[in-house]
Amino acid sequence: MTFQISVADTEFRFPCEANESVLDAAQRAGLEIPFSCRKGVCGTCKGRIVSGEARAFAGDALGAADRAEGNVLFCNARPRSDLVIAPRSISKANPFARKTTPARVFRLQRLAPDVMLVHLRFPAGIRVKFKAGQHLNLILENGERRDFSMANPPRESDGAQLHIRHVPGGAFTSPVFNGLKRGDILTAEIPFGDFSLRDSDKPILFVAGSTGFAPIASIIEDMTIRGIERDMTLYWGARQRSGLYSDLPGKWAQNPRFKYVPVLSDTPEAGFRHNLVHRAVLEDHHSLAGFQAYVCGVPVMTQAARDEFVAAGLPENEFFADAFVTRAEVAASGP
Ligand SMILES: Cc1cc2nc3c(=O)[nH]c(=O)nc-3n(C[C@H](O)[C@H](O)[C@H](O)COP(=O)(O)OP(=O)(O)OC[C@H]3O[C@@H](n4cnc5c(N)ncnc54)[C@H](O)[C@@H]3O)c2cc1C
Ligand code: FES
Image (cartoon, rainbow, N blue to C red; front, side, top):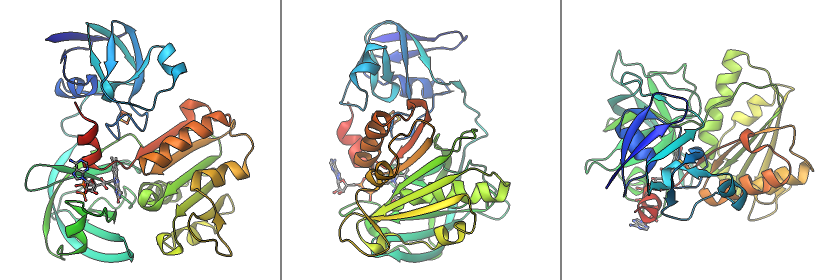
């Protein structure tokens, strides 16, 4: 059965099958609603149902207050009638904005026991536009896709530096640690995602778990290049010291408006906060009312950070997250 979806206060209308998500249907119609995880975790695709009925087809991150206000996550909402929707933003997709390109493995470097730097170079003459914080899709031979965030700033547009964490049993990341070599050619589609710096004067909390550091590094490097000055604190968490695999925070700390709090969750060590990374933020701030937060890492962390930061006064519209779900998790939550 096909329903018609209209976007309030716009001329946009598109069909949506009863068994597909509103987000997928919008994309099929060439419309872009912001999204990241596609799994009901990050909240990026949140919007309101103005009229009509939709249902979530899997558990998602919305609380009772959101539901009472008619909010849904469009990646997780299927229509049960024609709908009028009010997403946070919607625009016509620009077919030239996204490129599919071969990408040659230029450098591989083990950053930590379970993290590999994969530096990809695009063919000569190909420059790819992206915003700091966005991610790409690697398209595997069987057509499956894997998401990875660019750690380099957009100015370095001739390639992409990825920080890839080994997911035990992972179909893509396992061969990255055992077989991928310099010169290999991958296929990338770039860019995707809505995790990027928002204009504001508010002080920033950057919260990264493990390779969630990658998009945040891109954003901070880009701010430095563009001379954007804001008060900012980076909380970077890992289980052990080796998981905090980059020297960049030391370089950024030359900026008096930048503070760095390294956090370990397993074993206490001098010089490191011992806690879950988002809890370290709450240890330091009784109220988050005046902040903007950018949070990136595994879904359980981004979800806990959203809930606990909002409870500590962070306005919900000042919380931005990329939840590093695996494709297997997306498939497992699907229809
Ligand atoms: C927007 C975004 C940006 C990301 N950026 C990064 C990044 O910069 N760095 C990074 O390290 N990661 C990032 N990730 C996460 C990354 O995409 C995943 O870790 C990656 O997809 C793992 O691929 P894989 O093929 O190795 O694992 P998968 O094949 O997806 O498997 C993952 C796990 O699920 C298990 N599994 C396999 N099939 C199933 C099934 N059918 N049902 C249940 N379980 C199954 C596997 O055994 C394995 O343990 C990002 C994710 C998103 C959404
Ligand atoms: S894209 Fe829908 S919740 Fe993340």
